[in-house]
Length: 263
Image 1: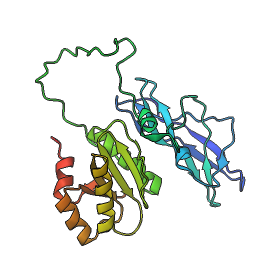
Image 2: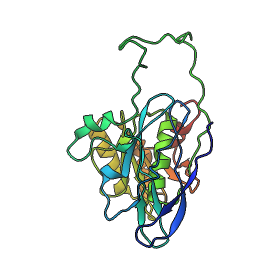
Image 3: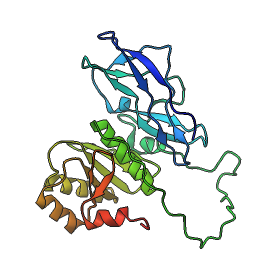
C-alpha cells in the first residue's frame, strides 16, 4: 500500500469558501490503489448541468498500466454548488464512447486486459501453474460508504469488478430511471431512489438483457416490492440491496448464488 492520499484546499468559485478535499482511491484489478491526479494550479468549476460523458473519467493504473473508468472527482460545497476538480494526467480525462459512440467504443474504455507490453500478441503467458489448479478464492470485498447516487454507482462497479467483471462501462441503452452499467455478457441496473423497485423495473431490465443476450442483476437502495421479488425469482434475476456501507446484500436465491465465495 502506498502513502495515504493528501488532502488539498479547494476554493468554491461561487461563495469563495475553502474546504479540504481528498481524491478518492479505487482498487485496480491488479490490487494497486488507483487515484486521479488533481491539478493543484487550476481552479475547480461549478457543475451547471450534467451529461453522462462528463460523469466518468478514464484513469490509468501506474502499476500495471490498465485503464479503468471511475466517477469524476467532485466536491459538494455548503453553499449548494457542486465543484468539479481539474486533473493533470493526460490519461485521466472524459471516458470515451459518448453519445453516438456505440457499443464498440464504450467497450474500449473499460479495463484493458490484453497481454503485457513484453508479451507477443496472441501468445499465452506461461504462469508455471498447472491448468487444473483451482483459481484462488476471492479476497474480501472492500466497499465504499454510500451517501449519494454517485456513491451507489461506484459501490456497484466495485462489486461487479470483485465478481470478476473487469470491463465495467455505462450501458448502451439508458434505463428510464436509475443508472445502467454493462460488462461483457452482463447488464446491471443501479436504482438509487428512495422507492422500492417495482415489478415493471425488474421486467424492463430482464427484457433489455434478453434482447442483448446477456445476464442481468439489479441493485437497489430502497429494496423491492413483493411482486418485484416474486417476478425476479421466476426470471432468475439476482436482486441486491445496497446498504449504507456500500455492501450489496443478496435478496433472493439467484443473488446468493452470485455472491457465494465459490461462484
